[in-house]
Length: 268
Image (cartoon, rainbow, N blue to C red):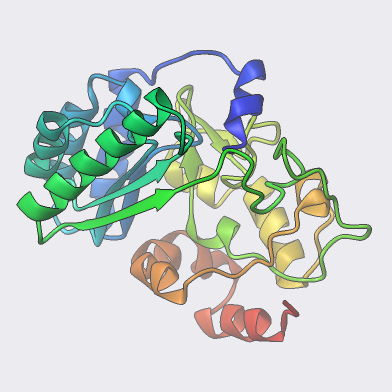
Protein backbone atom coordinates (compact mmCIF):
# COMPACT_ATOMS: atom_id res chain seq x y z
CA UNK A 1 0.00 0.00 0.00
CA UNK A 2 1.35 3.43 -0.88
CA UNK A 3 1.87 5.65 2.13
CA UNK A 4 -0.22 8.39 0.53
CA UNK A 5 -3.38 6.33 0.66
CA UNK A 6 -3.42 7.65 4.20
CA UNK A 7 -1.14 10.66 4.04
CA UNK A 8 -3.17 12.44 1.36
CA UNK A 9 -6.06 12.81 3.81
CA UNK A 10 -4.11 15.71 5.29
CA UNK A 11 -2.89 17.21 2.02
CA UNK A 12 -4.43 19.85 -0.23
CA UNK A 13 -5.38 19.01 -3.79
CA UNK A 14 -3.17 21.38 -5.76
CA UNK A 15 -1.44 21.66 -9.13
CA UNK A 16 1.92 23.32 -9.66
CA UNK A 17 1.64 26.62 -11.52
CA UNK A 18 3.03 26.59 -15.05
CA UNK A 19 5.31 29.50 -14.22
CA UNK A 20 6.81 27.70 -11.23
CA UNK A 21 7.38 24.55 -13.26
CA UNK A 22 9.21 26.49 -15.95
CA UNK A 23 11.25 28.39 -13.35
CA UNK A 24 12.48 25.10 -11.90
CA UNK A 25 13.38 23.59 -15.28
CA UNK A 26 14.99 26.82 -16.50
CA UNK A 27 17.20 27.01 -13.40
CA UNK A 28 18.30 23.43 -13.95
CA UNK A 29 19.09 24.28 -17.56
CA UNK A 30 21.20 27.24 -16.44
CA UNK A 31 23.67 24.85 -14.77
CA UNK A 32 23.51 22.31 -17.63
CA UNK A 33 21.90 19.72 -15.37
CA UNK A 34 22.22 16.26 -16.91
CA UNK A 35 21.12 13.90 -14.14
CA UNK A 36 17.66 12.50 -13.44
CA UNK A 37 14.24 14.19 -13.49
CA UNK A 38 11.29 12.23 -12.11
CA UNK A 39 7.69 13.38 -12.45
CA UNK A 40 6.23 12.26 -9.17
CA UNK A 41 6.39 13.41 -5.58
CA UNK A 42 4.18 11.02 -3.62
CA UNK A 43 1.40 11.57 -6.13
CA UNK A 44 -0.01 10.21 -9.40
CA UNK A 45 1.65 12.09 -12.25
CA UNK A 46 -0.90 11.06 -14.89
CA UNK A 47 -3.67 12.95 -13.08
CA UNK A 48 -2.21 16.18 -14.49
CA UNK A 49 -3.38 16.65 -18.07
CA UNK A 50 -0.35 18.88 -18.75
CA UNK A 51 2.05 15.98 -18.27
CA UNK A 52 2.91 15.52 -21.96
CA UNK A 53 3.52 19.26 -22.31
CA UNK A 54 5.73 19.21 -19.21
CA UNK A 55 7.75 16.29 -20.57
CA UNK A 56 8.24 18.12 -23.88
CA UNK A 57 9.43 21.29 -22.13
CA UNK A 58 11.81 19.37 -19.89
CA UNK A 59 13.32 17.48 -22.82
CA UNK A 60 13.73 20.71 -24.79
CA UNK A 61 15.48 22.56 -21.96
CA UNK A 62 17.43 19.56 -20.59
CA UNK A 63 18.32 17.51 -23.68
CA UNK A 64 21.14 15.56 -22.06
CA UNK A 65 19.34 14.08 -19.06
CA UNK A 66 20.49 10.65 -17.96
CA UNK A 67 16.88 9.76 -17.30
CA UNK A 68 13.47 11.42 -17.65
CA UNK A 69 11.07 9.29 -15.64
CA UNK A 70 7.46 8.87 -14.54
CA UNK A 71 6.25 6.56 -11.77
CA UNK A 72 2.56 5.67 -12.02
CA UNK A 73 0.01 3.23 -10.64
CA UNK A 74 -1.08 2.63 -14.24
CA UNK A 75 -4.80 3.19 -13.75
CA UNK A 76 -4.90 6.15 -16.15
CA UNK A 77 -2.33 4.73 -18.54
CA UNK A 78 -3.50 4.06 -22.09
CA UNK A 79 -1.66 3.12 -25.26
CA UNK A 80 -2.21 6.62 -26.62
CA UNK A 81 -1.03 8.43 -23.49
CA UNK A 82 2.00 6.19 -23.06
CA UNK A 83 3.02 6.68 -26.69
CA UNK A 84 2.58 10.46 -26.37
CA UNK A 85 4.80 10.52 -23.29
CA UNK A 86 7.59 8.53 -24.91
CA UNK A 87 7.37 10.54 -28.13
CA UNK A 88 7.59 13.74 -26.07
CA UNK A 89 10.92 12.63 -24.59
CA UNK A 90 10.16 10.35 -21.64
CA UNK A 91 12.88 7.70 -21.28
CA UNK A 92 11.69 5.67 -18.28
CA UNK A 93 8.30 4.55 -16.96
CA UNK A 94 7.79 2.47 -13.82
CA UNK A 95 4.34 1.04 -13.08
CA UNK A 96 3.43 0.09 -9.50
CA UNK A 97 0.17 -1.82 -9.95
CA UNK A 98 -1.88 -1.91 -6.74
CA UNK A 99 -5.06 -3.37 -8.24
CA UNK A 100 -5.95 -6.56 -6.40
CA UNK A 101 -5.73 -9.94 -8.12
CA UNK A 102 -8.62 -12.38 -8.08
CA UNK A 103 -12.17 -11.13 -8.23
CA UNK A 104 -13.65 -10.14 -11.53
CA UNK A 105 -13.57 -6.40 -12.02
CA UNK A 106 -10.40 -5.66 -10.11
CA UNK A 107 -8.60 -8.51 -11.79
CA UNK A 108 -9.71 -7.21 -15.19
CA UNK A 109 -8.22 -3.80 -14.31
CA UNK A 110 -4.89 -5.43 -13.49
CA UNK A 111 -4.95 -7.33 -16.78
CA UNK A 112 -5.72 -4.11 -18.66
CA UNK A 113 -2.81 -2.27 -17.06
CA UNK A 114 -0.46 -5.15 -17.88
CA UNK A 115 -1.74 -5.31 -21.47
CA UNK A 116 -1.03 -1.60 -22.00
CA UNK A 117 2.38 -1.97 -20.37
CA UNK A 118 3.30 -4.94 -22.60
CA UNK A 119 2.18 -3.06 -25.71
CA UNK A 120 4.32 -0.04 -24.81
CA UNK A 121 7.35 -2.26 -24.19
CA UNK A 122 6.92 -3.77 -27.64
CA UNK A 123 6.43 -0.41 -29.37
CA UNK A 124 9.25 1.39 -27.54
CA UNK A 125 12.01 -1.20 -26.99
CA UNK A 126 14.64 1.51 -26.48
CA UNK A 127 12.84 2.90 -23.41
CA UNK A 128 13.35 1.71 -19.84
CA UNK A 129 10.20 0.23 -18.33
CA UNK A 130 9.34 -1.72 -15.20
CA UNK A 131 6.12 -3.36 -14.02
CA UNK A 132 5.71 -4.14 -10.32
CA UNK A 133 2.49 -5.87 -9.21
CA UNK A 134 1.95 -4.85 -5.59
CA UNK A 135 -0.18 -6.32 -2.84
CA UNK A 136 -2.59 -3.97 -1.06
CA UNK A 137 -1.24 -5.14 2.31
CA UNK A 138 2.39 -5.35 1.22
CA UNK A 139 4.76 -4.11 3.93
CA UNK A 140 7.76 -2.20 2.69
CA UNK A 141 9.76 0.21 4.84
CA UNK A 142 8.18 2.53 7.39
CA UNK A 143 8.45 5.74 5.34
CA UNK A 144 9.82 7.59 8.36
CA UNK A 145 6.96 6.29 10.50
CA UNK A 146 4.23 7.43 8.08
CA UNK A 147 3.35 4.15 6.33
CA UNK A 148 -0.15 3.07 7.44
CA UNK A 149 0.66 -0.66 7.29
CA UNK A 150 4.07 -0.54 8.93
CA UNK A 151 3.85 1.00 12.37
CA UNK A 152 7.33 -0.14 13.37
CA UNK A 153 9.51 2.67 14.68
CA UNK A 154 13.10 1.82 15.62
CA UNK A 155 13.59 1.78 19.42
CA UNK A 156 16.61 3.99 18.81
CA UNK A 157 17.55 6.04 15.73
CA UNK A 158 19.28 3.96 13.07
CA UNK A 159 23.03 4.46 13.36
CA UNK A 160 23.71 5.09 9.71
CA UNK A 161 24.09 7.84 7.19
CA UNK A 162 21.54 8.35 4.40
CA UNK A 163 22.10 9.31 0.79
CA UNK A 164 18.75 10.95 0.03
CA UNK A 165 19.48 14.54 1.20
CA UNK A 166 22.78 14.46 -0.71
CA UNK A 167 21.58 13.56 -4.17
CA UNK A 168 17.84 14.18 -4.55
CA UNK A 169 15.52 17.18 -4.31
CA UNK A 170 11.76 16.68 -3.97
CA UNK A 171 9.70 19.73 -4.89
CA UNK A 172 6.00 19.94 -4.05
CA UNK A 173 3.24 21.63 -6.04
CA UNK A 174 3.54 24.85 -4.02
CA UNK A 175 7.33 25.00 -4.31
CA UNK A 176 8.23 23.56 -0.92
CA UNK A 177 11.29 21.32 -0.91
CA UNK A 178 10.80 18.21 1.20
CA UNK A 179 13.52 16.85 3.47
CA UNK A 180 13.38 13.67 1.40
CA UNK A 181 10.70 11.67 -0.41
CA UNK A 182 9.78 9.92 2.86
CA UNK A 183 8.48 13.27 4.15
CA UNK A 184 5.10 12.43 2.63
CA UNK A 185 3.14 15.27 4.24
CA UNK A 186 6.02 17.73 3.85
CA UNK A 187 6.15 18.58 7.53
CA UNK A 188 9.81 19.64 7.48
CA UNK A 189 10.40 21.79 4.36
CA UNK A 190 13.97 22.78 3.58
CA UNK A 191 12.85 25.93 1.79
CA UNK A 192 10.64 27.09 -1.06
CA UNK A 193 11.75 27.54 -4.67
CA UNK A 194 8.94 29.98 -5.47
CA UNK A 195 10.81 32.77 -3.73
CA UNK A 196 14.30 31.22 -3.67
CA UNK A 197 16.46 29.59 -6.30
CA UNK A 198 17.11 25.85 -6.37
CA UNK A 199 20.72 26.49 -5.46
CA UNK A 200 19.81 28.73 -2.50
CA UNK A 201 17.61 26.01 -1.03
CA UNK A 202 19.99 23.14 -1.86
CA UNK A 203 22.91 24.94 -0.22
CA UNK A 204 20.76 26.46 2.53
CA UNK A 205 21.32 26.12 6.25
CA UNK A 206 18.59 23.52 6.83
CA UNK A 207 20.05 21.12 4.28
CA UNK A 208 23.58 21.83 5.53
CA UNK A 209 22.65 20.95 9.11
CA UNK A 210 20.80 17.82 8.04
CA UNK A 211 23.71 16.58 5.93
CA UNK A 212 26.28 17.43 8.58
CA UNK A 213 24.44 15.20 11.05
CA UNK A 214 24.09 12.37 8.55
CA UNK A 215 27.81 12.51 7.75
CA UNK A 216 28.30 11.58 11.41
CA UNK A 217 25.68 8.81 11.08
CA UNK A 218 23.48 10.83 13.42
CA UNK A 219 19.71 10.82 12.84
CA UNK A 220 18.33 13.37 15.24
CA UNK A 221 15.42 15.14 13.53
CA UNK A 222 11.90 13.75 13.92
CA UNK A 223 11.59 12.06 10.54
CA UNK A 224 15.03 10.45 10.66
CA UNK A 225 14.56 9.08 14.18
CA UNK A 226 11.43 7.18 13.03
CA UNK A 227 12.90 5.93 9.77
CA UNK A 228 14.02 2.32 9.26
CA UNK A 229 15.55 2.94 5.82
CA UNK A 230 19.16 1.76 5.90
CA UNK A 231 20.36 4.79 3.97
CA UNK A 232 21.86 3.16 0.90
CA UNK A 233 20.50 2.77 -2.62
CA UNK A 234 21.80 1.62 -5.97
CA UNK A 235 25.10 3.53 -6.39
CA UNK A 236 24.50 3.82 -10.13
CA UNK A 237 21.58 6.16 -9.48
CA UNK A 238 23.78 8.35 -7.32
CA UNK A 239 26.46 8.48 -10.00
CA UNK A 240 23.85 9.52 -12.58
CA UNK A 241 23.37 12.68 -10.51
CA UNK A 242 27.08 13.31 -9.86
CA UNK A 243 27.22 16.56 -11.84
CA UNK A 244 24.38 18.10 -9.85
CA UNK A 245 25.79 16.84 -6.57
CA UNK A 246 29.23 18.25 -7.23
CA UNK A 247 28.00 21.68 -8.16
CA UNK A 248 25.24 22.06 -5.57
CA UNK A 249 26.34 20.05 -2.53
CA UNK A 250 29.87 18.72 -2.33
CA UNK A 251 31.55 22.08 -2.80
CA UNK A 252 30.11 23.15 0.55
CA UNK A 253 30.29 19.84 2.41
CA UNK A 254 33.52 18.15 1.39
CA UNK A 255 34.73 15.79 -1.25
CA UNK A 256 33.06 12.82 -2.87
CA UNK A 257 35.76 10.67 -1.28
CA UNK A 258 34.61 11.76 2.17
CA UNK A 259 31.02 10.84 1.39
CA UNK A 260 32.11 7.43 0.14
CA UNK A 261 34.18 6.86 3.27
CA UNK A 262 31.22 7.69 5.53
CA UNK A 263 28.85 5.48 3.56
CA UNK A 264 31.27 2.55 3.70
CA UNK A 265 31.58 2.90 7.46
CA UNK A 266 27.80 3.02 8.02
CA UNK A 267 26.36 -0.18 9.42
CA UNK A 268 23.43 -1.64 7.48
